Length: 263
Figure 1: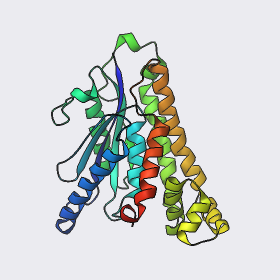
Figure 2 (figure 1 turned 135 degrees about the vertical axis):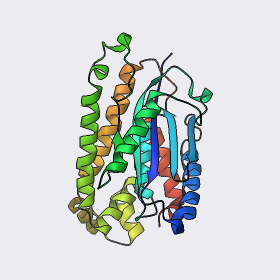
Figure 3 (figure 1 turned 180 degrees about the vertical axis):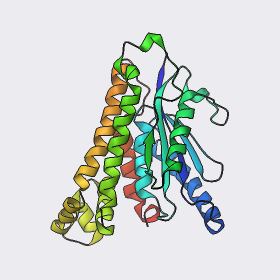
Figure 4 (figure 1 turned 90 degrees about the vertical axis):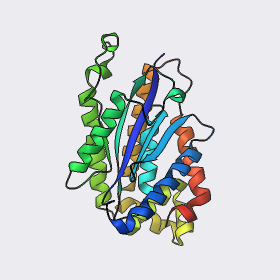
């Protein structure tokens, strides 16, 4: 049986700074703990902090890695040392529980690594990049499904949406960015207003002027599309992290711990 999974490889910008190395390493250790708690009771994952400034994550479900990476990016602590994520998704023959993340060699890992390397070469790094076409093993049995015919085009569309989203984010002021960060967790503008000590109308104004609705819609469309694709390809699959359940778990955890997580 084929199992749908997704992968991210997280790397950190400017992490070679000696003064920040130890602090960043401790922070990445903490992130591994948080992500493990977000997914606790929902489904099995594989996650490892390795090579000093890198985290590799594997989870069931096409949208899982992207959802987790998106939240990590928005709660990230160090503005001068931002994370970036090479992403891939697809199917494997093995059960995730059987995989040794340190030794596993697979085209999906190579895709995520390749996407991560492409970001590393950019002068202005984008936080996310999907790679779906390089290293793909041609499978004639699956060629009747259009996704496998058009992996490159699908990859281009996802990355174009993420680039457009990043342009909108770069135009945000500090307060507009803060409003969206808390909205992503709390999901209610009134609650964000109470937390930040501002009126609801002020928060709504920052939300609108900062294009937060458009930014959030791109996030929602990507994870819905990935989940929909997964459901079409795995009609009988029952062992996936449901995207809504995962997001609820992340949001509830961050609501209860935002004081120590978000500075």
